[in-house]
Image 1 (cartoon, rainbow, N blue to C red):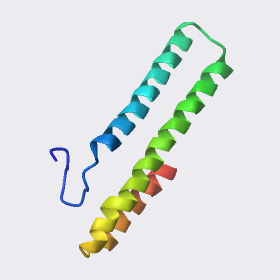
Image 2 (cartoon, rainbow, N blue to C red; image 1 turned 180 degrees about the vertical axis):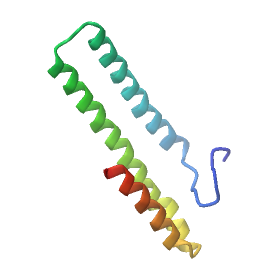
Image 3 (cartoon, one colour; image 1 turned 120 degrees about the vertical axis):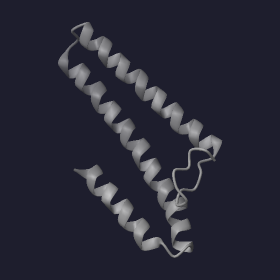
Image 4 (cartoon, rainbow, N blue to C red; image 1 turned 60 degrees about the vertical axis):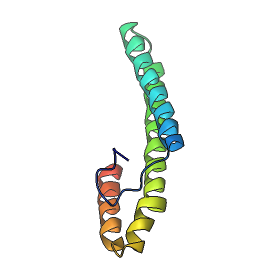
Length: 99
């Protein structure tokens, strides 16, 4: 698959890509909605509520990617005797994510 950036990645199925894209398009729409709310000088609490909804949606996307990485890419790395490096890589990303 063209979008595999290295040999450690397990390509996503078309269904996985489409599901991620649907979620990201929905989030994009929510961001545009917030822009409109700001332009319309809407109530701060309403805007903040929408921002929290976007943050929650982004977390769902992130956790979905983490779960997929663990179940596919890391499993592949373990089978290829490269599990330790894969765990280290994921832990570094998680450390940055939770900051």
